[in-house]
Structures are given as structure tokens and as C-alpha cells.
Amino acid sequence: MITNEQLSNLMDTNDEWIRTRTGISTRHISQGQNTSDLAVQVAKKLLAQAHWTPESVDLIIVATMSPDSYTPSTAAIVQGKLKAAHAVAFDVSAACSGFVYALSIADGLMNNPAINHVLVIGSEVLSKIVNWQDRSTAVLFGDGAGGVAVAKSTEAHLLGSHLSTFGDLSNQLVAGQTTAGHDFPKQVTGLTSFQMNGREVYRFATHEVPNSIQTALAEARIKPTQIDHFLLHQANARIISQVAKRLGQPMEKFPLNIDHYGNTSAASEPLLLDECVRQGVVKRGSLIVLAGFGGGLTAGTMIIRY
Ligand code: ACO
Image 1 (cartoon, rainbow, N blue to C red):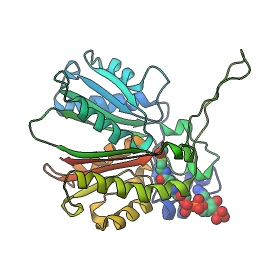
Image 2 (cartoon, protein in one colour):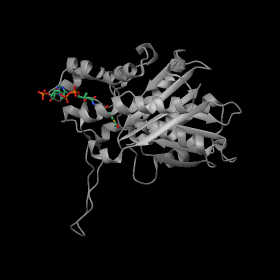
Image 3 (cartoon, rainbow, N blue to C red):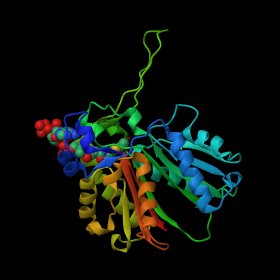
């Protein structure tokens, strides 16, 4: 665990600035474990909780913006290490909306009669692509992983979704950019670290997240007041309170854990869901909204009867 105090020894920042501007106090930084290692740990826990054998898994989707490699996909590595020999596996790249995108894809693919048991995992080792000299981004991110086991059911649990992509704003948040070579046969190496127009992403999130949630709710004919909990991507506590205000809903309905983890991108929503379930905040039958936003730029909402 790395505290704000520790970061202030590395760069010109301080605990007060980070806490008041973002709500973050600590974050976890991986020491040697890559994105697939974290995802495998999550997958094993999910199998144990669901009482599934590895052979019973039909599909593994890993949402990540910090994969181990271009190829193989992180999901393929997880499939191999899990010995889930019958599962098809692939990654989804939609940054902090990745988990909602992946869950929505899983939901669609479950119409296939051959797909009954699915693992959807969000896993990130963002510390690989953070520039630890850049205070404008380094204080924001953390490493982590979480996931859900989804099984076919006769009852409707995924009640609606809304996904959107704004590629014209793609340069507002970039990481891991590559460069095409122009000096053949000189080898091209290196990936760029995070660069973000924080104010623009803030503006985007506080507008598009409420839009996405309202559109998904309207299509499902559900009113915001009927939702028990809004589980928003944990990028900034101030963004979440702005979204609550725009939706006219009390902050008590918006659980926060950004304080301990920072922004873990695709891992943030399954981490929050897991904590809410363990703490008894989200119970069987609770009506919840999952909403993500981030690189792409992207936004996504899923309405779930837990
Ligand atoms: N410590 C101390 N001072 C800092 C730091 C820091 N870590 N970072 C910036 N500052 C300074 C700036 O230099 C600036 O100083 P100046 O006024 O002298 O020029 C001042 O603080 C204010 O900077 P702003 O960038 O205007 O601060 P702002 O209030 O906008 O907060 C933040 C910045 C937290 C990044 C905010 O814009 C934000 O949360 N944006 C959204 C980010 C986000 O949600 N990303 C999610 C997507 S993540 C994904 O997809 C992976």
C-alpha cells in the first residue's frame, strides 16, 4: 500500500491536495505481479465461490487497459493457468468503462446455447504505465483486480445497458501509445505513459455519466428513485458527487472506496461490487446501477437486479 505521504517524497504533491481534489488516501502498487497474475487470483476465487470446475467455464473476458502483452490476451493467459480448457477467452479494451462493456458483451453472448458459465474480470497493473515524475496523473491510479461469475438464469438480472464511445475525444486520455517506425530496420521500442487532460475528462464524466445512466434507466422504464445503489467507476470522489447531484439522488446511494484504492480503471467496479456485497450493502434483490467512464473516451451503464 502506498500513501499520499510516500508519493509526496517522490514528487511535488501533498496529502491535502490529493485527498481534497480526488478523495484518494492510499493505493496498492503491484510488486512483480502482472495483470494476468491478479486476474488468475480473482478467477480462482470466483470458481471457489460459485462451486464451478475450471472445465465448466465457457467464456472468460478480461477487461484491461494494462494487458501483459499485445498477444496473447490476458484472458488467454488466465484460461491457460486456470486449465479452463473449454473456455473461449479474450480481452476488452475500453479503459475504465471496460468492466461494463465486458459484462454487456457477456450478457449478449449468453444467448448462445453453448455459453452457460462466464467469468468477467477487470484487472489492471496501471503502475506499469504511470510516469512517477508526473504529479498530474501519478497520484490518481492504483493496481487491482475483481470480477464476477455469471451463470445463465431463468430470471432477468441484467435489466438494461447503455454504452457510448466518443473517439473524437480520444486524445484527452492516452497511455501506452506506440509509434510506427520510419527508420527501417531500426527497432521501435517503448510505450508512452499516462497523459490526460484532467479538466476535459472531468467535464466529460460529469455530463456523460448522468446521460448514460438516464438513457439506460429510461429504456428499462426504471426511475432513478427505484435504484438502491449506484456503483460508479471510482476515478474521483468529486465526479461521483456531481453525478449524484445531476441525477437528484442522495450521496448515500453512491458507495465509495476510492479512498483505499485510487483509480483502478477496469477493476474499480468489480472491486466496489465485491466490497458492497461483503458488507451487506448490496443484497440479493437489490437494484443497482454500474456505470463506468474513461479512455476512448467511453461511458457505459448496466442496470442489474443482483
Ligand atoms: N499535487 C499538487 N498540485 C497539483 C497536483 C498534485 N498531484 N496535480 C496538479 N496540481 C496543481 C496544478 O499544477 C494546478 O496548479 P496551478 O493552479 O498553479 O496551475 C492546480 O493543482 C490545479 O490543477 P488542476 O488540474 O486544475 O486540478 P483539478 O481540480 O482539475 O484536479 C484532477 C485535477 C484531479 C485530475 C481532475 O481534473 C480530475 O479528476 N479529472 C478527471 C480524471 C478522471 O476522471 N480520469 C478518469 C479516467 S481514467 C481512465 O480511463 C484510465
